[in-house]
Length: 179
Image (cartoon, rainbow, N blue to C red):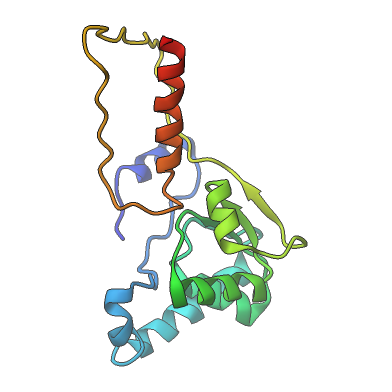
């Protein structure tokens, strides 16, 4: 992490500039080093996060993998809002799900598929907020070339939670409109 263009927005707004510092991001590729030689630094990151939790009225964690704030919330019992944008699998899913439940996190998920994958208890605060994107100022629907069928390619790993069924349904809906 480093200061970037977003800091200019703070300067122009009169708000206090953000405190930028390294966070403990849990990555499978670095898990072994994080829990061995990197452990002292990771514990220090959790301590700093715990200090922040006691300082601020609201803490919004913008991704599930910022583990220092999740663990600090468990330790301090301070509430945190966690925005979950990923669906881990296997052991990672079980661990993250358990942490969210134990810390009584208020959870925002980016889709119903993400909510379904985590299966958090009904009593736990959970809301679906879809990822935003800027709306074009003017949009003209392209006219299909009726001389040939529309060809679509979907590039990516096929997973039940990635939404390929939405693409298939949309294409099927377009075919029905042409009839």
